[in-house]
Image (cartoon, rainbow, N blue to C red; front, side):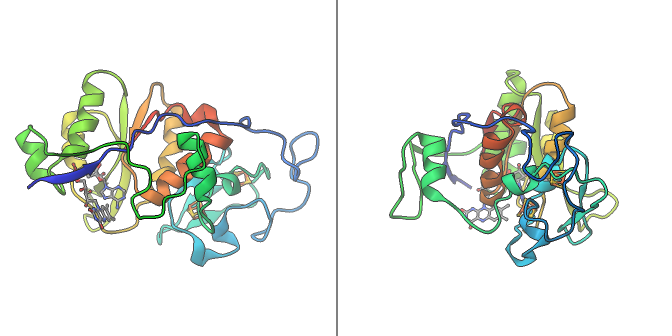
Length: 241
Ligand SMILES: Cc1cc2nc3c(=O)[nH]c(=O)nc-3n(C[C@H](O)[C@H](O)[C@H](O)COP(=O)(O)OP(=O)(O)OC[C@H]3O[C@@H](n4cnc5c(N)ncnc54)[C@H](O)[C@@H]3O)c2cc1C
Ligand code: SF4
Ligand code: SF4
């Protein structure tokens, strides 16, 4: 089976701001100014308007203190006692709104607003993986996995942010970082369920090296916001497919 592959080269985009800048909700020592409650204005959207949460995992992945975990239903769960009111979870949250003009300027350097559906497309190709296992195991020809494997092989990245079915609970999809051929084979195919991919940012922060991410549009939107609000972490993920 062949797949129409739309290549969107990530680049790094233009970034601004600094990691862990002083939040207006903290005192001079970085302590929260008020008791943190679920309607604190700096928190990501799940806590004030759950229906607008895409369950992308960005808030959990970016939180520097581990105050946000992911519940059984994949929605974020807050431990207010661990929160330092830094505002990063709200800054990177893609829920609630999409500012197309700002996104286009960040990624392409111009306020391009597409009148159609495809966004800004540099080039399109049709292809499939030449590795038979990738080709047969893929959702549509295995190109995504073949590209990730190539990046690992040439040493451009040391890990890939992908998904798989949980071994003990095979009906549950989970995000993980693949570092070799066999793990990439495990990650193949489409999981038509919510996978909070961006929770993996917390792992990326702890690991050495660079990473590629195979992620969906809402997760990519969270990543674009990460590039603006935590560029140090975002530069560890130079490629998004
Ligand atoms: C939820 C979902 C909806 C899709 N809807 C469409 C559509 O409407 N039209 C269309 O043309 N294509 C759609 N796709 C893409 C399509 O199914 C294939 O993923 C794509 O063609 C790539 O095929 P491949 O053989 O190269 O990928 P593979 O080599 O099989 O790799 C698939 C990659 O997708 C990742 N992945 C799988 N499930 C998820 C998930 N739930 N969240 C995040 N990452 C995931 C895997 O970890 C893997 O890296 C959708 C994919 C998903 C996951
Ligand atoms: S990122 Fe974590 S510490 Fe910062 S405001 Fe959000 S929950 Fe609190
Ligand atoms: S960052 Fe993602 S998971 Fe967290 S509240 Fe926003 S949309 Fe939901």
